[in-house]
Length: 183
Image (cartoon, rainbow, N blue to C red; front, side, top):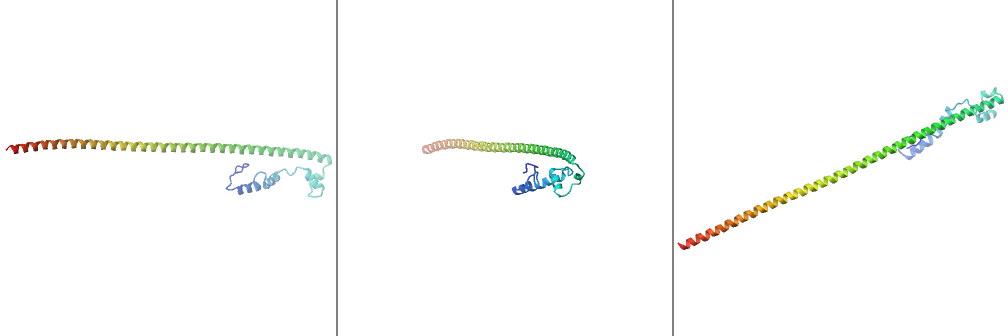
């Protein structure tokens, strides 16, 4: 991520290439700034080049030394104002980038908080589901135990009825045996 222009890149190499060749402060950026500068401004370098016989500046030819000094002083003020404006623009751009970065960080923190809350909610739901499953299993086991207890009670009742019937049958058999023996 480029802090100067807020562009994102897929690799560190692409970011470095961008910074070196295209971003603010790169050779291309400086050439563009130079191309847009007011070419009519007289700089000490341009005057020196003119006096050395390099590309001639037609504006200098008809000026007196005093006029040339005044023109260079005025042009230096204009150039300084342009540098100040460029510096101010750079500050605004840096502030804008810083604000965007802060907003992105805040959004990232909010997203992380939402994800954490969602995970917490999911874990809570899992715990509640497991507790409900355990409660259900316990209820099923208690119900099954109740059914077994009822079955045992029914078997005991049946056993006691059968024992009573057997006792009654034995008593009846003993009575019939004694009646047969008396006959």
